[in-house]
Structures are given as C-alpha cells and as structure tokens.
Length: 351
Image (cartoon, rainbow, N blue to C red):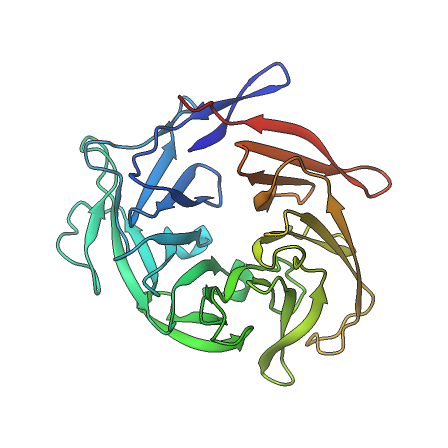
C-alpha cells in the first residue's frame, strides 16, 4: 500500500510506503472524513486500520494486529460513515454480506458485540478501542462488490452493489441502536443471469438534490438513478456514455463533491481501458427530481495505461486515477474545460 503523506520537499510530495500487514491482494482503501485514518481490506478476509500520528507518519499496531477478520471470504469494499454518527465502518464481501462495524473507545468492553466479535485496534499503552460488529445485512443472493454510506444529510443510509444485478439501500432504524437496519429499496440494474452484475456505485453529495446514485455494471452501462418523492421509489434518471468497446464492463465510478457549481462531475473507468469525465449541467430544478432535465457531455481522458480506479479530491477539482502500471495520475481541467494529467505519483519498484 502506498499513500502520499503531508510532508513536502519544495513543491514535491513525498510518498510514504506502508508495509501492508495483509497476506493477499488489497481490494480497497478508504480515508475517513478528516483524512487522519485509513482502512484497508483484502482478499485475506481482514480489515486493517492505520492512524496518522503527530509526526505525520501512518502507524498501526503489529502487536495487537490493528485489524480483524471481517468476512468468511475476501473483503471487496469498505466505507466510512460521517463522524456525526460515530466511528462506523461498512464492509462488503464475496460471501454476499454487508457488515457494519462500530469502534468503541472503552476498555471495559469485552466479549461479543451484537452478533459478532470485538477486536482491539490500538496498542496497550493507548486507550483500548474495539471494533464491534453491529449489523449483518444478508439480502444479496450473490457476492457484493461495493458498499457506500450516503452523505450525512440523507441520514444514516448505505447502498450495496451485488453480482445478482441489484443495488440495495438500507437505513438505520435508530442511530442509537445500530443493530437494526431496514432494507428500504432494491433497484434492479441488471438481470440476475449476468456474471458480475453491478460493479460500482457512488452517491451524489449535493444537499439540495434528490437522493441520487451513479451506478456502473458489468455490461458497461453508467446510469444515474434518482429517488422521486411523488412515486416514492427509485428510477432510472439518465444514461451516460458507458464502457462497451472492445470489452464491456465498468470498473469504478466517482461523483465529485458538490461545491456550489451549476453542474456535476462524474468520473468512470472500465474494461475498455478508458477514463471518462461526465459533466452534467442542470437545466431545471423540481422538488422531487422527477421532471428534471439535464444535459451532459463526456470527455475521454488520454491515459498511458488501463485505469482501474478513479477518485476526486474534496473540492472536486482534481481527479486521481490508478491502474496496472503502479502510477497514480492527477488530472485537472484547464480554462477551456479540457482535462489534462498535471502530475503523476509512482509506486515503489518491485524488488
């Protein structure tokens, strides 16, 4: 695992190489809301937590392990909830389960949480914190590929993407009792007979927008689904340019944070080797979003390698992409709206 720490030399970022405690491929990595904690998940079925110390170094506790076995098979994705709801982490696995974990800074907590074990994270000299299983969501018929908490203005909700072709949206019945989660909606994106079903999703962050998701599937479609108050359900809102030629399939999607612009930015990458930036300009606004009309443009970014993952910075001005070449590309838009690679962060060479 490699992350770029806050230390700089002139105008150059100095990456810090983290020695991964995982014993298999890392599937996902996620920063918390403040950017001071990192969670990683792996095919070895475990989740690991890193913390940023006062010296700007990412540390973990090898003595206690700073992690735990989260699923009975590979952990495919993870997501932090907004800290308003506490230290919550959601994980998805190839076993078809979505799990919700809560960190509790209480040395007196022992034994099992509701439905599972508790796991120490910090060293003995620090206050003991435990990650306890709070919920086990088992509605998917096949493996899960993605899990994402909703933005905080939508309350404590999370969405999962499954190989059975459905997106499921859950909400905590009571934020003070995280053992109970309600399956509110199921969105059929693809038929159940597809191999990989839904591959990725992301939430729209806009506070004044209806609840909206961008979803990528194994057929190469990049679709936007929106909740309508009038119908009381989710429906297909817009189809964006997908990833279908020469190979079908979307690998990742990312919705840029909302910073008061008159348009949205969505990035997507797929098995066709392309990285796209979709710009959606809102033309009208309604209370429920049912009659909204939007126009969009899609730009293909020229990359030197296949792109597997993409993600925006907190202001939605810089797009990061990564692929099989061990290089993270950083993209910015110029004054004419064309996206160009302005910097690259290279991983450590293999020994």
